[in-house]
Length: 255
Ligand code: PEP
Image: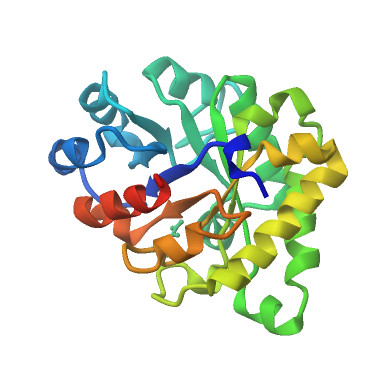
């Protein structure tokens, strides 16, 4: 597998952590640590930090993304943020369908599809999260489930828009638990995701899509996970809040 056909992307999902002042301090610490990275580096702080993150990262190699995006352009959707608002601010990315949104906020494969299309229509790169929970893994339905999640998330997404899609494989049982998928488990599912993309768009297009692994990736296990042929990057939760740890993962992706 020729990984040079696609970008290595390490993205930090800060979740509901850090207010604007702490975000500014974290980015000041992070910037010199990842300057000159050999991969794309993205931070996804809470909405209220986006303006300060964009200001702080101007002229650097760090991109900024939101943790969610609504699918309508405007209107009576209290508490939601439209894709065009994020691009106007200077965001380049939006996480879509994170398992915490599926678990706590009623996100479904259908709304993930709507959000994905809205994000890319506005010019954002959508980091589309898929992954099985522990019961589903034990039931042996991981491959079917993840392939279906990918298929539904990308309904109506043209091949020409694939450059704006990153797929993040995040086994729910590995998120925030300290329990990481083995590199072989991550590779097996990431390869199945690529096979699904190939079925939808053809092999050359599938080979160009960045597929991340996410789930307790850290400075110690990143190199092994990222060494797998279909694991092109990482979506990092806990470790993205520690600049030195996040920078070590960026370094592992930069070889
Ligand atoms: C995540 O929230 O996307 C994630 C992977 O979290 P953690 O790295 O903390 O498991």
